[in-house]
Length: 86
Length: 506
Ligand code: SF4
Image (tube, rainbow over all chains, first blue to last red; front, side, top):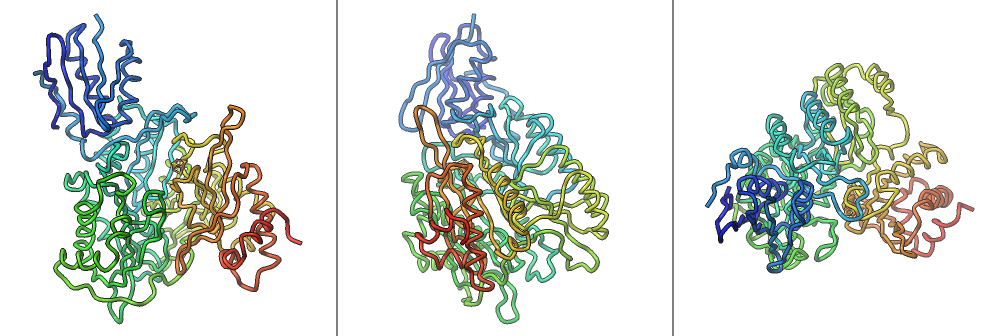
């Protein structure tokens, strides 16, 4: 799979690019990426699949994470920002 | 950089995906659907039992047969997907790629290829299309060259002389025809019922004759034309019909000939030879054998029904089953048909009733969230049972009509080409969403395809069956001998049809 690496973009801040992936992969990749990060690390997920823009926050909240921030980057791209709990 | 271990996902990417059900209005709570592609609807008893197992474990014991011969499961959680995909991989099935969630004109794939469900069985079959079906289906599975087309592409193949695949609604249809002593295919192109530009279109007959050995190359060249020349400007312009609308038939055919490196022969004979379908029990071309078409109005099928039907296919047939483009299921290769009918009766399935049981469909509106109750499948069932209770079944059969119900104007259930088509719309009234339907009359497909005309709008769901009954009693009273319902509707004015819908005969 292309785009399956988590890039470090700052101290305790990482980015995961799942553009081009259809459901369920953006959600599964996000959950797996969060398991690979340390407590309190922040993950920015970049995605272009609108169904996942809705599904990922629900899946994350269901697992006890704080409600993630969802931002529209451009017409067809979004960014979801989520922080691993302590 | 942290490398994620994604080997378990890599196995499935490009071949499996889930669609999204959870729309704000969806009352079911289903997060995703899984649309299992069953090319041509060909499935055997052990595969059907495994799908039944998946249904039991992940989909609350309920599935639906779609009008493209897939089996669709709902209530699928993303976190169960890899487990489900593994089972499907063992069964040899894949899914639609569901790229239509993306906002741009991208990630279109080739949808499940629809094929005559009684290929190789029908008595007067011209050509068995299953080798083309298999060759094409295998070619597209996981093929990265065809997963980012402007939008989806739909093929159909039929060789029985009927339009049992609704060829006129597909982007490219292969229809077997006879030219002198040769049997090959003629092509229909650019059909689509959806609202995208230039609006709903019946596929255009191309007037060409394709030898069977060239059919695969013609199919691939056509989908390449869609991929390479289709508009990516917007989703609305991205279906193949828009390209064809702009190019015209002549340019399309010359591009196709250039790509396949062959001049295509002309064909000016009939496209379809017969009207009708493959309802009830029919003798096969194999002496002494029958196929039994089990009606599942609206395509609902439970886990228990799947298991029972798989067992009966083993007991009375050779274990093969076929899903039909009219959302039913066929048990072929049956010798002892009367015993099978008795066993079907024991599990609550009857082959009695009017042909409407085989010819009525409803979309999956309860899951896509564009309607409120009652939903399209329930409505089609209710109308069929109501008509059967109030009108003699032989009369209903002679009228020769279908009822297709779509929950909204997206026409997923091809309501535009049914003799009686219903299309839903939601309206907010005093803060409450209310469900209404439009009634379209006079559509049809087969020898003389046509689109229905919208006769009534904003009809509450509980009135539909009464209005259709009223139309039919007027039709039975006023028709000319042997005039079909479609002919009757198409010769009547909108004003007359409104009257017929709103007054019982007399
Ligand atoms: S016709 Fe409308 S309600 Fe029915 S499945 Fe399609 S989009 Fe949903």
